[in-house]
Length: 186
Ligand SMILES: Nc1nc2c(ncn2[C@@H]2O[C@H](COP(=O)(O)OP(=O)(O)O)[C@@H](O)[C@H]2O)c(=O)[nH]1
Ligand SMILES: Nc1ncnc2c1ncn2[C@@H]1O[C@H](COP(=O)(O)OP(=O)(O)O)[C@@H](O)[C@H]1O
Image 1: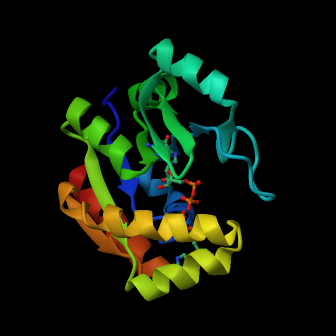
Image 2 (image 1 turned 120 degrees about the vertical axis):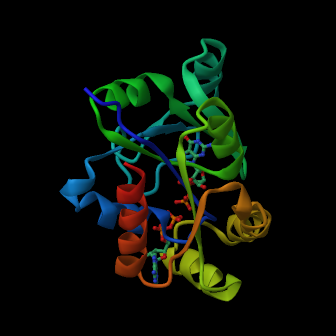
């Protein structure tokens, strides 16, 4: 069976990665699978263990690093995030196109290991709109919002490391642009 495509979707916090991803996953013709990450961040009220993330302690996370079980990992605004290698390998060998929704430092690690990965960076229409979205979500307290916005400016400055930069102006339009890119790269 043909191995699936590895797809990295990055972009600043609040740009709409999760929202656009959900739209992409409705399109069965793309044959997508989501790589569920591991994190030390506390779950948000709507998040579910083993669906949005595997929520672990810092001790458990460090154990995974030591055992070499993560494809990549990074620290992001006070928490660790990483991709379990095992599921990615399994899904790719099943022919699935696997989506990693990860931040920039981790994406750079994957680009170095897997040069054929399809890399997409989602940008907001403006920084003001990004701020509106992240605040509108009401998931982070003010000090964390500020840190995430500062991080966002730095992350957007690295967008040219990615093969494709897509603006998330409208969710359906962004989904269509990404679906087209994926199909061109299959
Ligand atoms: N390197 C890396 N980044 C991740 C991983 N999982 C999530 N992230 C990124 O970590 C950042 C923070 O994620 P999160 O706290 O869920 O906030 P949100 O993206 O604003 O909903 C985002 O840029 C995610 O894409 C991972 O496994 N590895
Ligand atoms: N194109 C868009 N236009 C307006 N609001 C959006 C758009 N895409 C996402 N949003 C909203 O912005 C907020 C952040 O989206 P989310 O998917 O959680 O971002 P991320 O996963 O990148 O942190 C959510 O409240 C979401 O409904």
